[in-house]
Length: 272
Image (cartoon, rainbow, N blue to C red):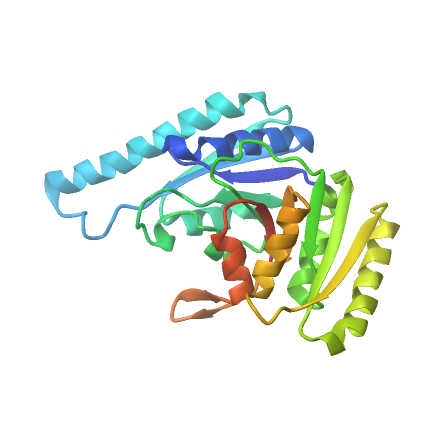
């Protein structure tokens, strides 16, 4: 597998510019095309009638034009070319639909104050709705290297999908660490057997991975332990399954996934 097309969520706010720069650099690293997506929805309470409604719609259209201008200016250096898509619609809906043409979706935490998830391209809903791996990047990261990659392993469908989706990144890495945090000391032996099989699988892809098995601590969470390991390894990227389910029109995430989404020090590739 190789990445041929990346998709990045583009916003008019300057605070999101590092994400676009990172996407451009990543596209050139992997010799891939880059699709830029701009989307915004007007607040239901702010959209009245007549002249007031026209002003609100005009503001949204102006924001989308600024996002497109920014994308075309910054992404002009992508060697394999670019495409632009935009719509006045919920960003998650537009990005999920447009991801049909991409191998990977790049997003981050938007600085929109208290805006609800459905009004921005939030990582959580995208993980669950795109059907593509989602790369959530820190707000100030304008480049991503792969010296050290930490893979959070659990013998689940989501983790298996994540390892497969991350293969191009793992092949580019200098060091790959496969980590399983076992539920108890009694399950460490079985965990080691599973992770060793994953390591052997990666070796057949030309990837040498180190294995680490530890028991879940009594204090803190498995996510805290993983993030501590990522800090110690100076990880450039964490690869993890995204665990969640739908409830009352919202996605409800497990504590592990929720913690990885909430942190903003490490780029995380999620697969569901």
